[in-house]
Image (cartoon, rainbow over the protein chains, first blue to last red):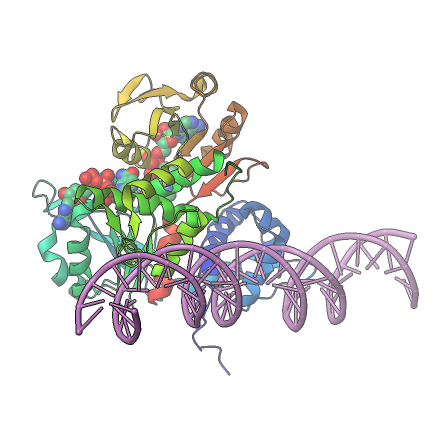
Length: 209
Length: 209
DNA sequence: TTTATATTGTGAATTGAATATCAACACTCA
DNA sequence: TGAGTGTTGATATTCAATTCACAATATAAA
Ligand SMILES: NC(=O)c1ccc[n+]([C@@H]2O[C@H](COP(=O)([O-])OP(=O)(O)OC[C@H]3O[C@@H](n4cnc5c(N)ncnc54)[C@H](O)[C@@H]3O)[C@@H](O)[C@H]2O)c1
Ligand SMILES: NC(=O)c1ccc[n+]([C@@H]2O[C@H](COP(=O)([O-])OP(=O)(O)OC[C@H]3O[C@@H](n4cnc5c(N)ncnc54)[C@H](O)[C@@H]3O)[C@@H](O)[C@H]2O)c1
């Protein structure tokens, strides 16, 4: 019986899987072929039990003598996280933050890449910026439909957040990564991740106090 | 008995407090003086119960008829999160991301502000960039000591992460906000927050899959 | 062969956070 | 005055994530 049933993983586990994979790529480059849970845990600043639990959840088994086979583990994580044919994403709001993220992704990832960015500033549109074509926001719906885009990164100014989020949902986007300081609400079935730098800094300030 | 004992709040609550405050500033600007838990919840995309529980934890009471007094609530959150005389932070790694964050903070916050940025690229040092003085990394220890800096934002290239983190700890930094893709380990008593864009995106990709 | 050691895999217990529930209260309106 | 409404504050419950504890296994050493 093929294990093709949808695997419901805890969100935290998915995040760690992404990071395991990144670290394991480095280990491969260093010539390692196998790794123990305690080694991986050390590099990720976790407990070995946590690592083993995560790998158990994705159904990967190691050996007591050699630990885990890095190559196989990386492949399995890819099978879980990546979509088969890769996934194009878009970014909306080509300001300071948008540009930083775009530059970072340009020519970097294979499975996840930024297909286009959008803005409403005519100075920025219809040009290549940071290696990616920047279109006017008015073209977003047709682009999403044509290119079958599912994920959008939102880095517009706070005032534009609601309006642009509405456009994204209307265009059929399934997942939004919101970096504006304005909290969003999305309908059932749409996935939302939010992160705010100021919140993190204020939390740190509280902790060191 | 004065309630001066150290208040141990859940991390998630602290994060929400930071966001409550930001939203409440807006409400004040709109002329509101009082707010109900369900109103605040709506704006933050939470349940009213969650809001009330957070406020309960910080010992703030509202009234059944008028809800919470925004001004008082903001003041109390400030007393919990902010240090008394404000807190200067530094940023290390004036690349794309560092510049975006610096621009965002320039002339923005009162209590939290970026006092200086550091880099090891001589093209960038000993200049004002995005409104903030950029020094060479070699001056970091003396600066931290002299200005009594406790918090650092880390946006250097991945390869430099360990080395720079070590310098920060050595200089006496108490909290690090790490945006590099390299996980850090810090000694007991040092606070660490980490965030990685790629991880968030890969999680979204998994969720929409 | 036997013992010691190191590792994985996992059921059970614990911790931490979110949610449900409800008594107490304050105001309104008849 | 008294029923009805809507709110807070607090306790109880549920849910999710992490950690504990240890059995099972493989290898190396005696
Ligand atoms: N840069 C940071 O470090 C930082 C930190 C915390 C929060 N944020 C938030 O991230 C967002 C972006 O920050 P930033 O520093 O890049 O700001 P920015 O002002 O540099 O960029 C905003 C971009 O959005 C575009 N835009 C505005 N309205 C639009 C619309 N309706 N449609 C399409 N594009 C539109 C603007 O033209 C601009 O290019 C802001 O909401 C900000 O509050 C940024
Ligand atoms: N930009 C993004 O969207 C993004 C996304 C995910 C992760 N990251 C991570 O954030 C970090 C910064 O990203 P970026 O895009 O700004 O990279 P960047 O290359 O533009 O900037 C790195 C900066 O660090 C400086 N630096 C390098 N070594 C240093 C040292 N020893 N001391 C002081 N400064 C040093 C460089 O001079 C440069 O200015 C990287 O680790 C990157 O992996 C960035």
